[in-house]
Image (cartoon, rainbow, N blue to C red):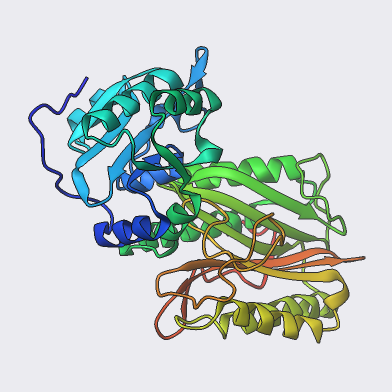
Length: 396
């Protein structure tokens, strides 16, 4: 069903149409067939259906949102969603001229998408799909129903689309980082001797939720341990705490790491964290629009290599936004398995990077800083820029 009858023109397109059309042309794509939550959210201007925010499964199938966008033809755009999304449209209308809020599973959604493509004369077009986010039953239906269509992997094109953030996206990423940082610092101050890792993680969940962020995970270490999973281990006087949390604000990720200490840091701990900070600062010094991504990586790695902690310390950086690792991809298989395809390309204004240096000290524990920076024309802007030293526990 089209519950936007009579709407034949697109208005309020929430993305840079000229840029998206250019990227589609370069990728040889006539029509986008987006099915991942992050790309449908992007193409819909930030919208994500709350009912399926935590899990896609329902009944015998799953939720499958689909955004269809024809290159140069926004008047033919369509959103295919769940039957309950009609209410979302009534309150906050989708920009797409066609809306089918009618589905409960993958096959009915895919069938409506096929019918729409045939209706707009694109049954034999070059269709850009997301293989990793298109269920096999839906793929089989599309392949059978559109035998003359050429299905193209649009993953890279969509990654390039999201690589350069809008001002609205930058603001959401900044807020996410601020909320996560404030939550971590409050949690460190709250925790005291005898507090378990599980209790600390649950306290962080409450802190993030109460600030309006959506908690996703917390990787936590105490003392000399390098194990970051929840447990009954307790924090003891003089021990370090490493708290690495990811949460999101309206879908945009905040992912940072800060350090805590129960008591006062000794000279060795001060020195170790300063070594980590030196590598971070080396990376920051090369962050600027126009700098090759690989040059930033190489400079930070050279500073780390010359450090006395190099044998047990690691550095990496990656793009982030709607997902934790996205373009620009700067390093190959380090630690996530993808190619560092952006290492030889210049950083662009409004890209966002996560920069992290991790020390697995043999006796003092897990010592890490992770920061989020925006690439600017003159350098960088840091989000959540506080609490980057030794934060005292048990002081709240």
